[in-house]
Amino acid sequence: MITSILFLSALNIAQAENESRPLRPTTHPTDVALTAGPVENFVSELYCDPNTIASEIKPTTAGEGTGHLYIRNEYNGWVDVSIGENRIGRLQPFTTGVIHDVAAGEYTVSIAVERSQYTDTVKISTISEDYDLAPGNARSVVSKDPNYKKPGLDDNRVYPTGQLQEYTLPVAP
Image 1 (tube, rainbow, N blue to C red):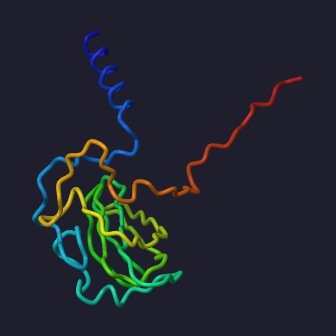
Image 2 (spheres, rainbow, N blue to C red; image 1 turned 90 degrees about the horizontal axis):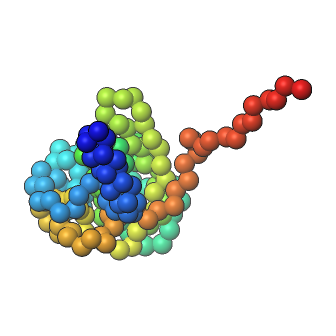
């Protein structure tokens, strides 16, 4: 009985949590194993040259100027990120990586989840502002603001799958 009450209390607290909050806490130490510089917040062993990758990747829809390409890992597993034919690197679970100073526009990004044979292909547009990443590398600022929003959580993507269809059971005459 007590276990049930504790479970229901925890469930109510979890449901009361603001949905726009980050997927994991933001008040933790920075991670020195993550990259800093032109390709930021990826695991240290990149698949590309971080100093030249911004000029090698091309947007599918071009814009004007340059921007920052924020790539969010929404999965609870490690993912490998590719843009076109270019393999970029690996992101930890629920972590946002960024490639700085790329040509502005929309990019087609492949996110392959480790050990599941699942690849998600998303279109991501560049952002002109440079956000601090949390969780992040040693350069980043650890957010303690209760209203902090992780970059990219304010997007309005429409997921084409998983939509419920209304169905009515036939009634016998």
